[in-house]
Every structure is written in structure tokens, then in C-alpha cells.
Image (tube, rainbow, N blue to C red; front, side):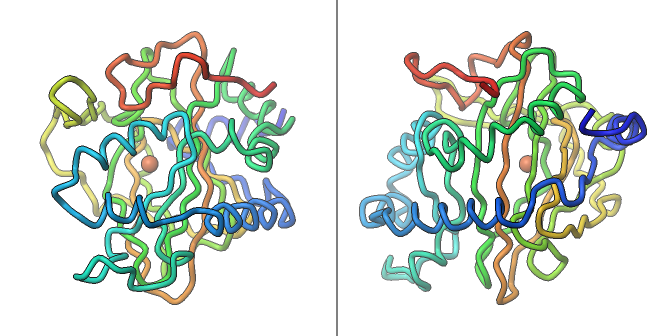
Amino acid sequence: MRISAAQLKHYQRDGFLVLKDFVEAPACDRLRARAEQLVENFDPRGVASIFSTHEQNRLANDYFLESAGKIHFFFEEDAFLPDDTLKQSKEQSINKIGHALHDLDPVFNEFSRTHELQQLAADLGLVDPLLLQSMYIFKQPRIGGEVVCHQDSTFLYTEPQNIIGLWFALEDATLENGCLWVMAGGHELELKQRWLSGTEGMHFETYNSEPWPEDQLVPLEVTKGSLILIHGLLPHKSLANRSSRSRHAYTLHLIDANSISAPDNWLQRPADMPLRGFK
Ligand code: FE2
């Protein structure tokens, strides 16, 4: 077993679990270096125009939807000056890369498909685990945007709801640089809303409009190499990063092949690119 029975119990009780030193520092650094390389090779001109001009919502939506089976780059909301040029360097303007890094990039594939993670998925009760999506999150210095309180099942809905988020700290995550905040036991709450993609575009369907009890969220400061497991129904958020340090993280979402990923989820992989497990 990769986690003890006591740790599994904590995960089931709290809806999250911190596994300190799950990944060794050199593996974190390899992933960081590869992300840096991807950004270096990325020509931002076409994509920057999609995101900097509000009228181009449809293009931005298409770029987002296509990222289910591609490696796409998304900018921080505060990345642009009024004249649509970047405030900071390209390297310090990207919010995240998503959402098929784990299948398309050899370095990300290697990081995402280890024996340890396969064992962990089995410990968590996934019978036939599939890697659904991956994101490299930069949380840039000074402009790293806030991520408001949400449940991951809102965006990645399966029946039954058994999605598990793996959040790898590639640097120390602190209060200053925008660490995660979680609501212990909040995964017992029902799903608050779903983000649907359909003929009328992407929109939220809300089942409970009560605001989140944000005073019940606590910060999770973790060291580089830590892995945080996040239940799909756990309310969590992260604050903006106004510090001079980045807060790089890599996330992977797992589902069980025996559950059904909803046909109106935003994430639909191309027919020739079915989801894969750890093999
Ligand atoms: Fe999330």
C-alpha cells in the first residue's frame, strides 16, 4: 500500500489528504524545466489576441474546449496592459497549461504514470483508473489569479461521482504565494453546481445558491514534493499571488473506467484519443 489504513480513513473523513515528500525534488525540477521549455517554444501571438479581446469569446471557448486533447496555454487574467501587450514577460504571464499534457508530452507522461501513483489509485479504491486531465499551474508572482471556492465535480462530472484530484506542489506553497484552502469534511455537502457544455454554450447549472461557508476553509501550506489528494466534492480555493515568488503546481484528475463521464462535460476527448490508465 502507498498510504496507510489510517491515512485512507483521514481522506475519507476530511475529503483531502496531504502526502508529504511523495515526489522527490529532482522529479519536481524535471517537470518545471519541461514546462519552462514548453512555454519557451510557445508562440503567444495568436493566443494572446484570443484572450486579450473580450469580443472574441467564441474563439476563446473553442481554444479551451479543444484543449481536452491538446497542450494549450492560458494567460493570467491580469497579464495584459490596456493596449493588449503583456505586462510581464511571456514566461511570467501564463496562468496554466492544459489539459492533455500527461498523454502528449513524454516528460509529463513519465511523471504522471509511475508505479507509486498506480498503487495510490488502487489504495483509493479505483478499480480501473483513467487519467482524465492534467494542468500545469504557474500561479505567477504578483499577477497569479485567485481561484474561487469550487468543487472539481462541478467541472468534471461522473456517475457515480468518484473523481479524485492529485495536486503536486512543485515549489513550497505558502499563504504568501497562494496555497490551497480546503473545507475539511466539506465533501459531504452535495454538488453545488455543474459547468455544462451544450448547444447554448458553456454555462453553470446551479442546484444550491447558498454562498460557501468560506470561514470554514483552512489554508494548506505544503512543501515542495507534497501531494494533496482532493475528493471531487471537496470545496477548495486559492487566493491571488501578490508575492514575488511563483507557486508552481501540477494537477492530475483520475476517474474510474467503471463510472461514466457525463456527455455534457466540457472535457470531451477526440474519438481517436481515448482516455488511458497508468500503462
Ligand atoms: Fe479545483
